[in-house]
Length: 489
Length: 128
Image 1 (cartoon, rainbow over the protein chains, first blue to last red):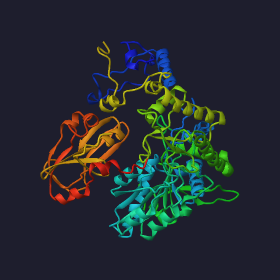
Image 2 (image 1 turned 90 degrees about the vertical axis):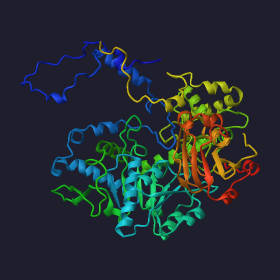
Image 3 (image 1 turned 135 degrees about the horizontal axis):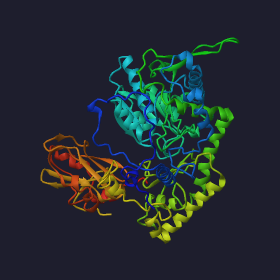
Image 4 (image 1 turned 45 degrees about the horizontal axis):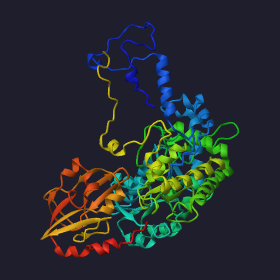
């Protein structure tokens, strides 16, 4: 099943709408700004509607079905989030309005900063970063600014464990730091001996993903933070896996100095398909003065007659702006809606059920699928998709076959320390029937892998498209629509 | 898995063929199999460069992952295999032959002692 492009549907002079005659004098546009050839598609309205409806039905999302894409926390996004984000007081304001006229919006941002601080233990929060890796970059720039403000300019080394998120080394490299990878120990924790060997006076810090990409809580977290602090470094926490920890563990209390949150993962804002994301950063009070500007402050608490007053402030040694205006405000509205709807106990329930669901699937498949670091997992687990009696079967084959069962595949081939990795994160928003159906599918596929491997090699067969040629897709990039021959004539 | 007896190996899965004071190197059959279909090879070392043992000489990208390749021995780069830029699949097809990456005029022959023979490489403990 294929859908033509909108350009292939186009025929010259077909019109969807007619513009009314202008009721103001026509203004000539400067010649330099006029194009001779602008190949806009010419399609009637009903064809446009059908085209985009058909494309949307080829898509797969959390509103279609189960989406256990490890590390991405593809939980259901409650629709009430969309209602609040569309309230006129939030949707129809402009970031350049005087602060007196947008007190509600600033109050919501302030409360969100406070909630995230309470959840994580950090003293100050900026809502500016646009997504997770942007939050990392912001956090690492804060670490760099901290060392530079003390004249400690030789600290250029950032340690990144091999179980960290793949964006961590990139964020440090973008910040001008030199990256040293740390091995994990046999339990999947940070190897403290390897860490100690790298602790010297060039140490800027360490980036820790906890739970790590194996879905394991790092049992050495306290000792690792202590070691780094003892040698003058700071600890960056990658908060992308915070969905396992709400109400259970506050990262700042074990020695994390800076951390980003992924509102589009943990706090149920739209994710995939463009989001946009949002990656607020929390810091200890020692680092608050370096936060990107502006942050929202409550400058007057108010009393019975007067409401509280909120203002935008620039922290004293701010690293500057990292995003235009106030970050992705509409996303912050959605995340705040989620937090206040659930409340303190609800958020705790999110994490306990996310961890329970992951452990449930792990327990159902672990006799068939090898779990390289078998421990109680957190919100996700990693298995190795290979068997000696199923040569030629790879993680990719399992993933493609899962599509035939109506599931989105798990994350493939990450973390790199597990060969043929499948990283499975069910999230808390799934029923036991869904978890069982997914586990049943995994077990059936393992059986097929040994007894009828062609089914896997040919999968998917029950999807709008069959197996793509990934090599060709990577080598022969076509990045823009190709206009049909004789287009427009 | 092929492990030619006459070559030397690193724990990062590079191989070396010694021809006098010249070392020819590439990645092993095990490495190409782990990477799966290779779509892009960038040799970052330039002819004439003098590089130390352990420096990055190439980046190999597959449909699964991107991996750095490190120089098993230091010295002057005297040749790079430009055919891999257009035909990265050679690394999958012929890792020990046509898919050599660079040739090095070794500056310190004693660095060869850091490498493993085929027997030791074969017995290397693979974590997972």
